[in-house]
Image 1 (cartoon, helix red, strand yellow):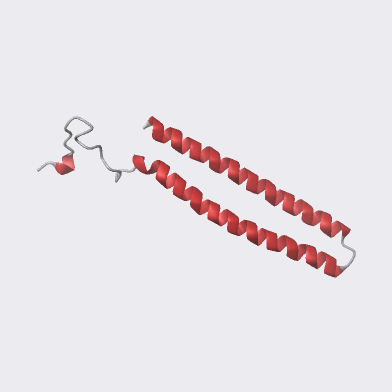
Image 2 (cartoon, one colour):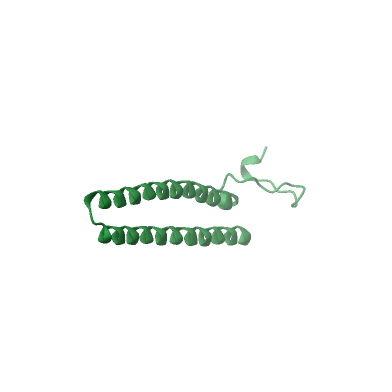
Length: 104
């Protein structure tokens, strides 16, 4: 049980670091857009900066979505042993155990 909790905690730490890095990259992208808009001399320059930012945001959204699903899978795998549907210990590895739902 303790090992499962450690693995879950480690998974949460990894997820937290990754999401924090993604948040920072979003802030950096917004900052870059502001800088480009401030230096744009024409409307087409400003439109190009906005388009570039929007394209990058869409890429980031796709990356974030893939990472969210990967993180969800990690959490499910790490927490699976805590599930009531998790495989039970075999009688060969533990003293003979009879569970109430298995009584003849």
